[in-house]
Image (cartoon, rainbow, N blue to C red; front, top):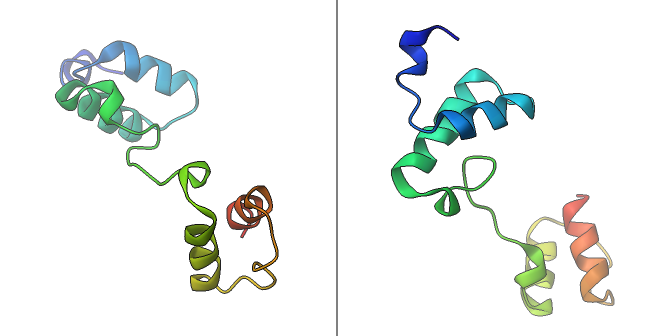
Length: 88
């Protein structure tokens, strides 16, 4: 990466970690700069925040399953619902 561009990276250490993990230059720069601006813990690994199904209640999981059109969700246990949602 040219020095002029590297000067615009606000968290070069995180940038390099992301590049080693296979992220594009643009994505690594976007995530590392967002982390520098608001703190690493405030920025999700993929640049945004998505809900963690493990924290959801069974009724919430069933509602989500219904919304996305899954079948046979009503008799499933929490772990089965989470698996179904993640693999849909």
